Structure formats: structure tokens, C-alpha cells
Amino acid sequence: MDDGGCDWDNLFFDYVVEGPQNYLISITTRQGRVFGFFINANTKTFRDDQELFSTMRDSFRTYQVAGEEYLETVGTTGVCAY
Image (cartoon, rainbow, N blue to C red):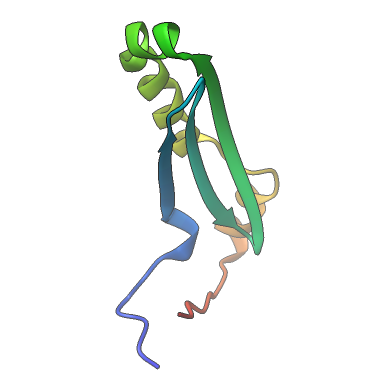
């Protein structure tokens, strides 16, 4: 199956869960593992600081997983699946 050139190691899923406690969530996979970043705040704080929380969540995209330096040096092949 053609994966359409997907790069699963650079794919992020972002979610907002609203309720008495709000969550801003980002999930990704790297090296066959799942990583998540969760921010939790009450409704007022979540609303007042949403820009700050979005900046924090976006910083998760720059996080380098331990061992990635090695993979960048030796190269790696990946397979995307649906």
C-alpha cells in the first residue's frame, strides 16, 4: 500500500477536551513509541492563558527523543501503515 509519503515520526495529533477541567493534548509517535504532552487547567485559567498553553503545546514539536541523534547519524528507514 502506498503511504503517500507520510512521515509518521513528524505527525502530531492535537486535542482539546473541555469540561470542569480542560486539557490541551498533543500525541505523537517516535521510534515505535507513543509520546504525549498534556496541559490541564480549570476553565477560567484555560480561557485566560490559552495562548500561553498553545505555545507550550507547540514546543512539544521541538522535543528531541533520546537516541534520535544516533538515528540521524546512521540513517533509518521507516514504514507508514494505515
